[in-house]
Length: 71
Ligand SMILES: [Zn+2]
Ligand SMILES: [Zn+2]
Image (cartoon, rainbow, N blue to C red; front, side):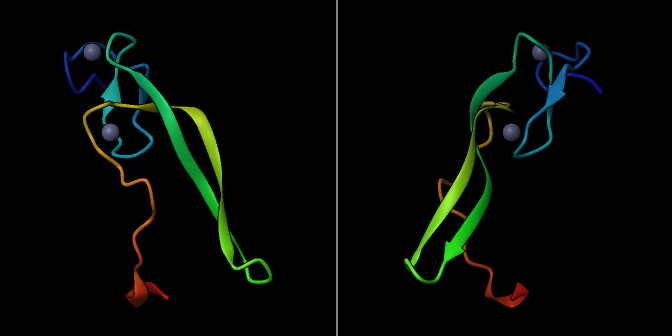
């Protein structure tokens, strides 16, 4: 795998869009690992990884979008 930005050998890939990144272009940011829904408290809680690898070019939404057709 090559870096999406400069075509050097990639050290990892973006958690969100899958683009490869070398050490110069890798960025770190929070990644929402999973969402727990608690009916009793009527709110959702997310398990977040604070320093997941991201490319800095894609813009994931802070909240998951509803996909009713997959229910
Ligand atoms: Zn690069
Ligand atoms: Zn990305």
